[in-house]
Length: 96
Image 1 (cartoon, rainbow, N blue to C red):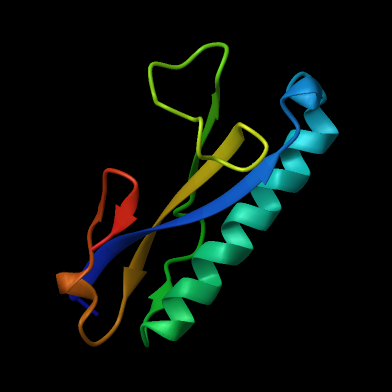
Image 2 (image 1 turned 60 degrees about the vertical axis):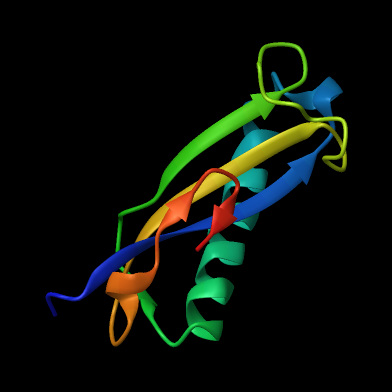
């Protein structure tokens, strides 16, 4: 399938636990699950092993996190394929 795009998935956690690798790994799993659910809702499929994770916290980010639940944010960016996937782009904080 040559029709590909990108989507975000999200998870929010406790910033006090940011240094706990097992905890952060769980948030990454949750963010990937969220990306897969978003893909299904849009009628596309996540490309296997395409996930890339970014962990943002209020302590080490220039991103405004005041409105983020928990203030520890894990973002998962995935590639998707299928009909209409070429129109999907993960940009800024949104799936567009």
